Amino acid sequence: MSFLDTIKKETMPADYQNMDEKTLHERACAAREKLGERLFIPGHHYQRDEIIAFADASGDSLQLAQSSAQTRADYIVFCGVHFMAETADILTTDEQKVILPDMRAGCSMADMADINQTERAWAALTERFGDTILPLTYVNSTAAIKAFCGRHGGATVTSSNASEMIKEALERKERLLFLPDQHLGRNTAYDLGIPLEQMAVWDPIFERFETEPVSDDIKVILWKGHCSVHEKFTVDYMEKLRAEHADLQVIVHPECSWGVVQAADRDGSTKKIIDTIAAAPSGTTWAIGTEMNLVQRLANTYTDKTIMSLNPNMCPCLTMNRIDLAHFTWCLEELVEGRVVNQITVDEKTAVEARTALDRMLYAFAN
Image 1 (cartoon, rainbow, N blue to C red):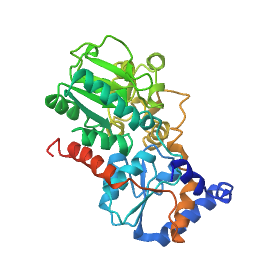
Image 2 (image 1 turned 90 degrees about the vertical axis):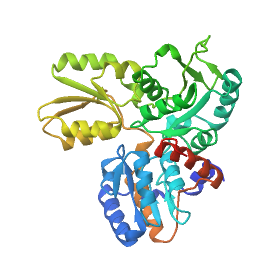
Image 3 (image 1 turned 90 degrees about the horizontal axis):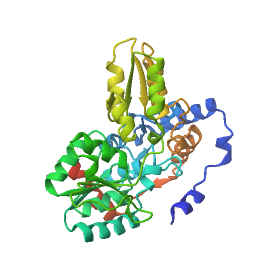
Image 4 (image 1 turned 135 degrees about the vertical axis):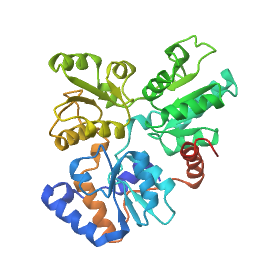
């Protein structure tokens, strides 16, 4: 069954979309109570507040997948996006069922690394550079890309451990292919002392490097992918905010462009951003370059500080925002009736190879 067939078959009834938020919340609470310990709800930091309110655990994608694997719940209703639910399915048991409330909740960055394009790129790159490349993929990628890295000796990385993983990879091979986010790869490699001149971007559409000629001493091959949310932050607007707020501090996610990261006071993973704001002194002023739902939640939580977005016109991540209270309630009520909708499954071969890539990250290439 194709992905589109699944969406068509498991479309939420229109009645749910017409319910008011109070009714949906009450019905979701009732369904959750009936399901009891059979249900576990992980919620990504970028989810809407009304969804986070139901989360048994909140955090980044890998953290939530690991939390799902540690629970004995029959049903994992993953409030995030498709690749996150895939990772949860890879790490949980065959008996547990992972559910994505709205199958349209994908990730534009993950979709920028298609497995067929990746296989063709690997063939072209290894023909040119020989057996000198090790593939790394950000966990914000499909199960197929994780599996690709697993079978080619590579691993996954997170924004928290990308520096450690890139350093380790370059001790094992002369160069690496970094998928699918060019910005995380570039920012991390640069911080490790690799000059921009030793990095090049591979364009999967035209199946060539963006700029030629590429030097033989290239160290990092960056896949031409990006996060549509984080790429919208600009140095120009950062400078405007600094002119308006003399004491402004700027912290951004490393998925932002190189220029933005260089101009910011700090950069780091979602967890680092949250921890930094939590620890900041009262009265300080912050501009944050990450997803709007999280920025707004931080502003509402830490009212003793001035917190703003680095982009005043920023909308929440459109695909993350697909998980609304209507779809969430529908999924829970279907489970109460014994029906599983929008189940995410990864085939065994892909799961084994993807788990290998994840394990290499978790155990620093020990296996």
